[in-house]
Image (cartoon, rainbow, N blue to C red; front, side):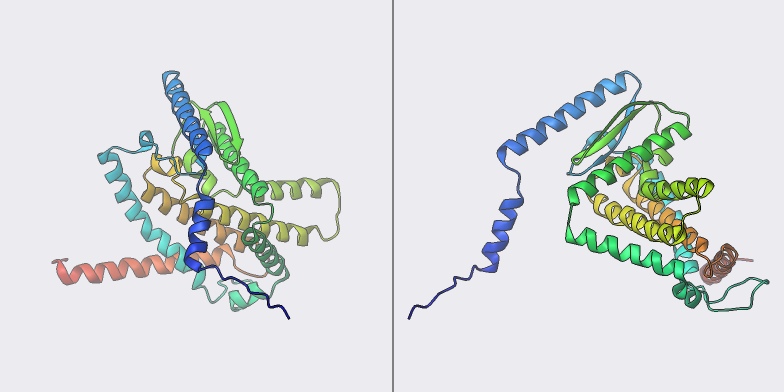
Length: 309
């Protein structure tokens, strides 16, 4: 009678092996270094021509040229601290709504209406499908390419909106960039709060409605909006810690606060567009109430320490 013995690999050794497997080979390291050197050389040439670049980085870049001067960084940090106030109020206004403030309909619990509505159900299904797909890492390279493509196309769109010109465009799974003669906060940060593929889905739906009457189009729209918005959110959260030049260009703290505030307002807008749920009037009313409460609390706090008349 023979016995089979199974040798257990210690967890520490397994983790070390995983780390070694994740490290790039010498050839890949040289390739990455050459790519970064080529990118820096291009950027110097672009600056001589009066051009700049807005780009997404997948790996850590540590580009010193994107760092702000101390006065600029201080100013952006102070602005970021001020923006924390509307960020907190916007978040609380969204998640503390209990009633619908609308004369045309009786007072009702807004969240119970929203969660029980069919549009929200399809939106939630799309959200969970994308979350499952993201964490399963199935076709992750394809999704990464789509995200970078949408990221750079959003840069390009806002460059044109702001009156700039696009002189170069590149998208790969290792990152991408757009060469332009103009850059500002909106151009740099727009891909982090504008869900490009959700906009594509919405515009496609509007075009289809003009020419055809398609059954279950509304249900498909809510499903795809939930899927694409979650796609935008999870890949943005995945990208942000990877040393993004777009964030450095405007101050990382300030950029993160702007991105958070914009995404909260975007989520509130999406929920307001869902029938039988949240309304713009309810959200704005709750926002105003919380803002006045903040003003009153600030006044009472300051009056304890300062001689206010």
